Amino acid sequence: MKITAIHSHVLQTDMPEELGYSQQYYAKRTAHLVEVQTDEGITGWGECFGPGNVALANKGIVERVIAPMVLGSDPLDRDVLWHRVYNLLRDHGQKGMPLQALSGVDIALWDIAGKVAGLPLHKLIGGAHRTQVQAYGYGMMLKRESVADHVARFADEAAAIRDMGFVATKMKVGLGARDDVKLCEAVRRGVGPDFDFMVDANHCYTTPDAFYVGRALEELGAYWFEEPVAPEDLDGYRELRAGLKVNISGGEAEFNRWGWRAILENRGLDIAQPEVCALGGISEYLRVLALCHAHHTPVINHVWGSAIAVAVNLQLLAAMPPLPGGLFPREPWLEFDTTLNIFRDEMLLEPLNIQQQVADNGGFVTVPTGAGIGVEPDRDFIARYEIE
Ligand SMILES: [Mg+2]
Image 1: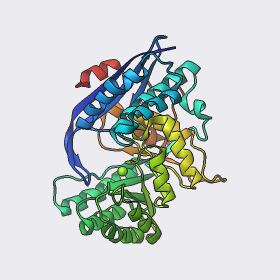
Image 2: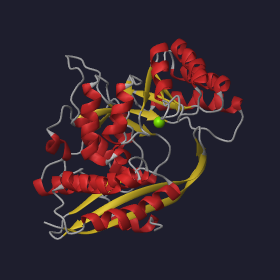
Image 3: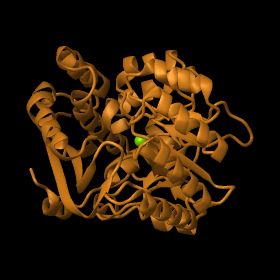
């Protein structure tokens, strides 16, 4: 079996309204799919993390840098190909966009392996520890509006996400430490005293500001405080984890086993959030998962992007061993963006209908059982939104 072609599809659409997080506002939704074709007619699909112009640059890496390294090779040799590409790109970037690009190709190779075996990805990895996964819903994005308007909206949105059936909710912050505490108080008021909420700073704070917000989160009983400081600030992570009672989470901006080894050895995370479409694909995710568990650090995957990324994550969450195990273990959750995303909700021939599943099944989503990642994108849909 041979790889005959690798195509990268960047899809984009205008969003109904501009949304923001602590780093920027954005008005376009992007998805970057990778398609690997073979001489036996089996096609694999993968996805690369990275919006907007980053996706376009990653497309160049996929098609002009990685594809020539792997065309003609056996797609089942995915670990061999991973190391061939990584070793040849090492001098040009051990993190960031080369790894995001490699992730999409690697995921497509795993999809092919599953289709060849006639098995879903979770069976290929070692079986399903769970056949359904509870989802948490995030929303409460920033907008160009006053602090008072944010406060009122966040309380309402938090209650609405709880009422949709999600198991917990997650909010953004980023207006500045003092105002951010007001937003967190509003979300606690919105969801009531007994519902989990989490706070995602997207690395906007200095360590002292993160302590200020983190102490408020202790009082409010937030479940985790995500990316409080810059991902490079390993000492800041360690100090926050040692000094705050709220769980410190992060890792979506970290790459490969060597980057993850550094965070974990520095004891900076209570909860690890690896992003399979960025850190190096499924091959590298499995190594990072083992490394996290070797440090007794629970994993709740970071999930972003189209239905391909969501399906891959459902497969990985099914195959994740319990840590440490027990009659009533804390199970991993599926991260779900509650803002409108047609690339997630309308791109598949058979949609996952996650929000409907959440509403009907007490927050649970069923893991796909088809071969490979278990979903197939609609080529007409891709053609309609493809920009390059
Ligand atoms: Mg995040």
